[in-house]
Amino acid sequence: MFNSLTGAVSATGPDYVRIQTGGIEWHLEASGRTVQRLAGSRGEVRVPVYLYHREDVMRMYGFADEHERRVFEELLTVSGIGPRQALKILTGVTARELQQLVEHEDVKGLSSLPGVGKKTAEKMVFTLKGTLITSADGTTEPVSDIVQALAAMGFEERRATEAVRGILSGDDLPEDAGARESEVLRRAIVELS
Image (cartoon, rainbow, N blue to C red; front, side, top):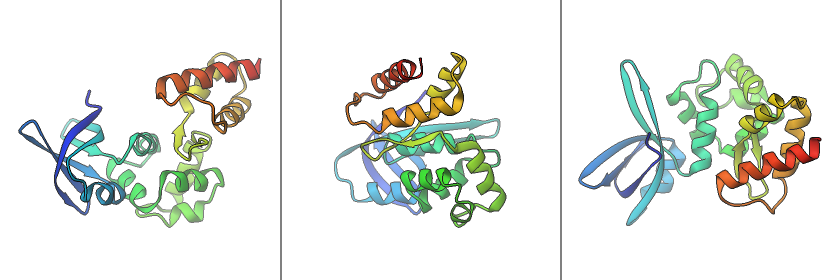
């Protein structure tokens, strides 16, 4: 599975970035925010990617950072939202703003995003509420895996979500994503026990 591409930006368009690496030019579909961020890049850049593969379609998507990719993946869990619509949403709103709209159940605000109607906005609230948490450093992290793991251990889901939110609001967590997730899980188990 592809995780990222490192190379020079060879071209950009309104909804794509092309990365030249090792004699191959990769075409990555991307949000407008990602395109803006990478358009003026000089030298090598590292672009997190997501490979979307179905029977008749294979596309690669590029992201400004790991957090944008995580939120993109969470958006794909919402019934009726595909990769292109997820990119439109991420062009219209930052990951942090999206989290706030979802947590406040702001269906009207979500409906104002590109390609999102009232029914899709309601599905987004239903599916994503409690899964996109903003940590102390301002990044948005999907935590549904941690909450599901805690629920599988017998902890009540709402309490688990609150515990994970509280832990993520601290500023003493490891920077490495894997170590961070393990530490959040460990602390949540201690707190809920």
